[in-house]
Image 1 (cartoon, rainbow, N blue to C red):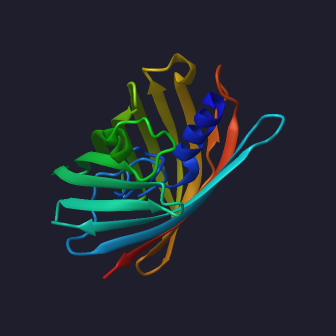
Image 2 (image 1 turned 180 degrees about the vertical axis):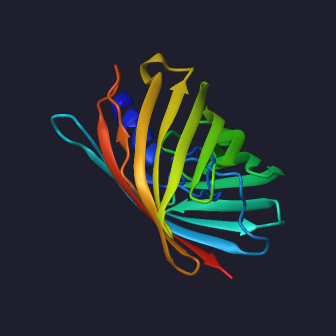
Image 3 (image 1 turned 45 degrees about the vertical axis):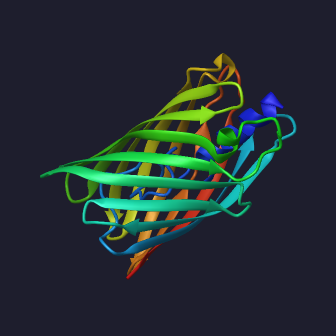
Length: 248
C-alpha cells in the first residue's frame, strides 16, 4: 500500500496543470508554477484538464486523471477558485492575492485547502475526513522583456492523517519565451521534499511544454513532465493537457 500511495502522490503532482502546485484552484500563466497575476475582476476562468503518467518499472503502471477548475476574480487583486476531479474524491480550494506590482516585478500570496469527500478508514477522525491538507506560500513573477518571463512559486503543505501530519515543501521555477505571437515555449523544474517520511524524501520533475493562444479568451496548454529517478521511486514520464477559457 505504501508503494501504491507513493505512486499516486507522485502522479498527482504532474497529472493536472494546476495540480502541479499544491495550492489548487488558482490561475497560472505557464505549466506548473503559479504566477503573481490574478483573473480580472468579475471574470471567470474555466479550465478542464487531463493528464496521465507512466512509471518506468517492469509493469509500467499508468495513472490518469481529469478535473475542472473554476477561478473567479473577486477584486482587481484577489482571485478565488476550486478544482473538482471527475471522481469527486476531493474539493480543492485556493485563493491568490496580488500584493506587489512594481515595474517588471510582481508578488502574490497564495493559500489553499483540500477537502476529502470520502474515506476508506472508518476509524479516522471526522476532521481528517473533512480536511485532507492545507497549503500556503508565495508566487513571484519577473518580466525580463516583452517575450520572456520567469515565474517562481514556493509553498508549504501539511497533510492530515489519523495519527500524524505530513509536512512537505514545494518549489517551482519556470521560464517562458514567446516564439511567435501567441505561442510560448516553457521549461522549468519542480522540487518537493517531505520532512515527515524519509522514504518519500524528495522528488525532482522537469517540465517542458507550450502554451498556445490563437483565439480570443482561449489558451491551450501542453506539458510533458519527466520525473527523475531517485532512491525510493522510479523515473516517470507524463503528459498533461488543459484548455483555459476566460468567461466574460
